[in-house]
Amino acid sequence: MKTYLAVFTLLLMSLSAQVQAWGEKGHRTVGLLAYAQLSPAAQKKVDALLKHKGFKDIGEASVWADKIREQKLPAYAHTGPWHYVNLPRDAEVFDMSRDCSRPCIVSVLQDMQLQLQDSDKDQQAEALAFVVHLVGDIHQPMHVSFADDKGGNTTKVKIKGDEVSLHYYWDGVVLRGLPRSEQLAARLMAEADNEQRRQWRAAPLKQWLAESYQLTRQVYANQSKVLDAAQLQRDQALALKRLQVAGARLAALLERQLGH
Image (cartoon, rainbow, N blue to C red):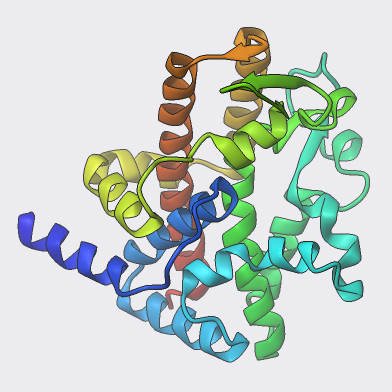
């Protein structure tokens, strides 16, 4: 076991450097976790698609969907709603016709899985980047959230004297101060056993949504307006668990699509 973890850590350390923000740190960690759980055949196909698109590794691919939005590239101007789905506050569960009447994270993730089977390498490589990113998003609180609050963007909280939106707190603050993505992925890989990963991987997409929505409801129910160190620690623990789960499920998805 020690030898396996040492080799895994070295593999992660050989991949690209990270910037220290949750948006990148979280997504890169999910990608690294998933890649480490793929079969050699699936890794080979992933590597070929990453190279085709010009990505150095799966970590770089994992943040591409956010980068193209930040750069305001006209060809991708329509992709903003692809990263989330918002539900009525009184809804108990996700409803496709009600909550995804325009493309949302659920429909796009399904479409991109189909696009992974395209014969066009450009289409496949772009689909891979979206899939890696969206699986991370769908496991984050606030990305399956309430429509009347725009996914936590209008609720304000204070952390260490700074006022930020609840959405930004989860996207941009929660993982600050934690190790870089390579070390974080190695740590999370070591903390979960094969049986836990098997259970996570077996869950269908509707369960992913249900989990995230219930977590979001708990966040709203328990969130104070001023967040102290104890609350941050609890939220970090929740975020880390969601990264573990997302990594396992992303690996299973990619294995199904590319591991043959």
